[in-house]
Image 1 (cartoon, helix red, strand yellow):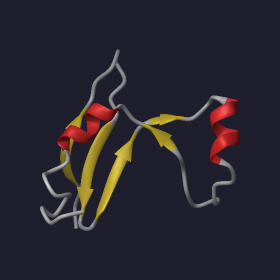
Image 2 (tube, one colour; image 1 turned 180 degrees about the vertical axis):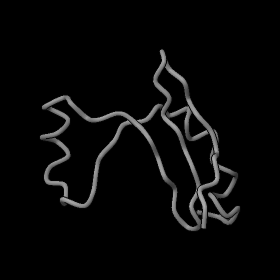
Image 3 (cartoon, helix red, strand yellow; image 1 turned 45 degrees about the vertical axis):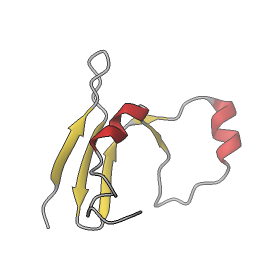
Image 4 (cartoon, one colour; image 1 turned 90 degrees about the vertical axis):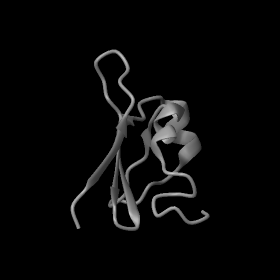
Length: 71
């Protein structure tokens, strides 16, 4: 399935972005660089990332989630 663009939250030239890919969401955001935040998050598996996005990016989610059903 191809990515479906849902929206972008432009902030000073940076654009966290949200796409839908079937049952998944694909999110472009900001790297977590604050050492205190990294310590609070703890270990992250090698195949996962923790990113930061503005809350307003979630406004692009369809009601009920990507497929319209209750989340």
